[in-house]
Length: 345
Image (cartoon, rainbow, N blue to C red; front, side):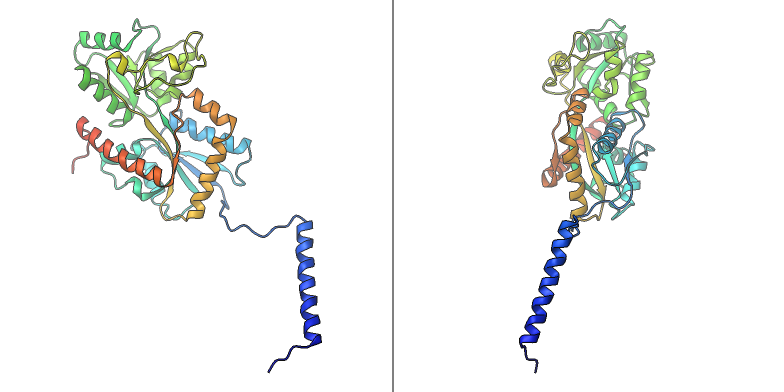
């Protein structure tokens, strides 16, 4: 039988005193107990399933710069373009990195269109949704040296020229740009020659060079050429005008661009800019990136970037993001079927 006595009590008190002293000393030295929350232990690969210069690439590299500027991560964020197969290369790479928290991907709506068009073994549910960062607009652009001032003037000219006389440039085949092009054709009875390029940056350059007659590029992909007086926006494919009133050119702001619907072209389409991780990651690992992007979105840099690219800054996480993705997958199945873009089984 164990008996406690004066000696035992004094020993226990001595131990408690030592422990208290150690805690006090650690506080004085600035040492804290290790956090249970996860953070990266090596560089994080930031996959872009699209070419350089396009909207997704620009956003990823902007995010990389903000993280570095504000020291938001201890480890580096490395942007890697994997655009092969309309982004299939990037999606399959991240799908194969199960449980790897050191890999994230920025997605376009090719998250839906690429597997539907190609039949690759990939679905967005193979990944872990992290956050919708924004929705990206599409604008109908023409070269500034053309006579067209409105979308109606342009589509009237396309119709007058006859089928397959005007060239529409876009990013990829059977992707967002071509979906919009087909929607315009069905609505107006026009017929374009659709010419696919690797990314929105190249698309804008081709329009400046008059190698195509029009594009439906994202705002950020053509803003510099617009500012330089090389391109002209005719309308935005949204049911409302963009809310940004600061002048981009000497005479126009994003808010001055009318909706395509008001020009007699009732086509409405926005594109996802979202972040995903591989499947099988933990809640703590997802929480780290949700917190990281929350910090990024709180910076003045982000607000300026949103306005420069005329983004819809809608942001979703968790169940709300999953609900949106589920709804958008069904919508894209319908759009792709209507355009005749579904892969043959």
